[in-house]
Length: 192
Image (cartoon, rainbow, N blue to C red):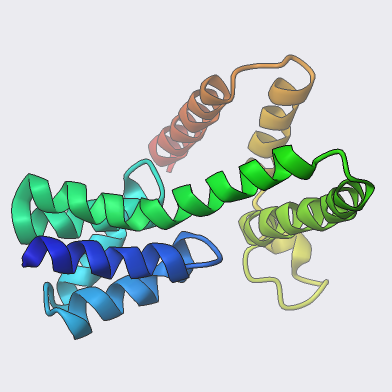
């Protein structure tokens, strides 16, 4: 019975969590805490932290973790299957429709009109991370220079240069910038 509950709970999460992993958190919370009582609020908070830290989508990580906690390995497999199944079906259906009708002028026009919107969404997401990282809590133009994190600006510029001009592997760039930040912090700690 637990396996069926796990599957159905995460099938709902997978089918209704439009907008990515963070949109799935309230749905997962409702299922895991309110509906089935599989965990407490404190446990769920720890779960979200662990799911964010580990590689992979947060909804899949959370489903696997909760399934493992509730019913061991079979529960982890069933919960994970439940959360990914709706996406697999929808993407397969869309791929079929795309390949069947991709030559239609209407479809090509729709896809061309969506490209700028997708680029703007990616840019907006990047800016929501970049601006606070570079400038912290800027309340006015006057405190912009004093709040600027010049080390972050320098590391970003170096990473961008390595990625775009020299075509470095992104993982290597992350390791280099992470190492540079660690070295800078250790040097500053040693000097103060």
